[in-house]
Length: 281
Ligand SMILES: NC(=O)c1ccc[n+]([C@@H]2O[C@H](COP(=O)([O-])OP(=O)(O)OC[C@H]3O[C@@H](n4cnc5c(N)ncnc54)[C@H](O)[C@@H]3O)[C@@H](O)[C@H]2O)c1
Image (cartoon, rainbow, N blue to C red; front, side):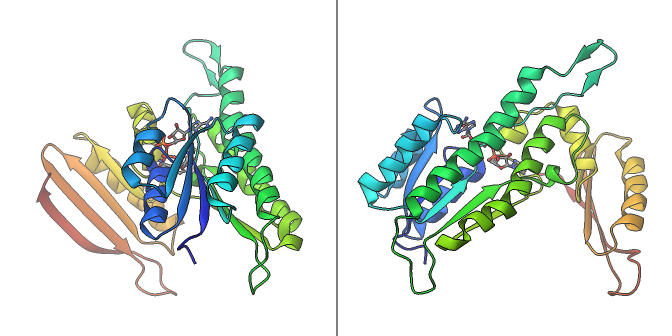
């Protein structure tokens, strides 16, 4: 299925997008790596060989994305798969009462433009190119994958812009699926939790900690973390019955891991399965 498929990956120079490009190339797909001219896209494409071509693209630009579609057509003859990974994040409170300053409107707009409008820009132009494919034996012409985030459903302090931008991607998926269904073009959106990429690294420590604390995998550092950990564990044990919970705490050089899990489908999960102390790597 992936072998020989022609794909376009936005944000393909870094993080999730880069990993997607690498995986597709490894499985024999031909890939248009679309990312900003300032990114490492050219280098990444060169490393991966002739089946990966870099195109300088700002996803918010109609001209750039049209050019990327044209490259897919000229270089590989078609487009079967489009993966939207390009994205940006910001971490600013709606109003900072200590400094008496409001969230800058430009920052809110920039995040929406890249994450939401940019994603839609790629979807609409990719759909046009996929629509020219001959349908396969199942009547399918192509697939589009978008990247939202857990923040679409569970936004944290400072994530108003980011959460709104990702919730919009989630919201547009169903109507677009309906729009494109007559042509056999499928679309889906993934909503990942946190993973370590340059985007995550760019956020302030305080925001990272805050975001981690309320997600399934906790990472906390500092002497008070043990107490916080027990507190949060209690909250989670009473609120998320069906998910395993792993909590990590780092106190000085020691790394403590707790894993709670449900006893069965019917009983509330209250078991401490593992309690391990290991030297931090
Ligand atoms: N890292 C996480 O924890 C996390 C969690 C959930 C969702 N996501 C989402 O996953 C996607 C990938 O994020 P990542 O963590 O790999 O980030 P990353 O910063 O490593 O990669 C993002 C890429 O997007 C590119 N990009 C930014 N603006 C662009 C634009 N206007 N046009 C074209 N390319 C542009 C950047 O140059 C970069 O290469 C994003 O949509 C992000 O919101 C990330």
